[in-house]
Length: 143
Image (cartoon, rainbow, N blue to C red; front, side):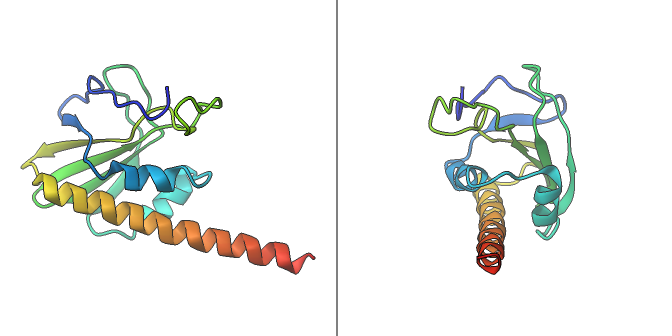
């Protein structure tokens, strides 16, 4: 079911999942377009602390589309991005489930994680706007 939080979707060696209040900022950007792993990497690698994109499977046997790993304030943060395969859009979105956050080591304060989520959403918004402008420009060229 789309947009549902899965609190039992855990990762070995990590604390979580957590669902910061501002995850909807990220969800709004995920719902705009067809982001590939390469697209996400091109956006996320520009953010401070980005380590890598990786694949993870949580304890509920869900293989997440993308796990953005950040070194952050003395700890590690994974922002898990779900697949978008709910073709019926059961909750008004194509996402399979809510994004989630896991932390490890010296846990960053929740306010810091919220800032990271905001920064990710903002970077995605800039890229989504640039992609839309490029697409509109391309269409005008052919008409």
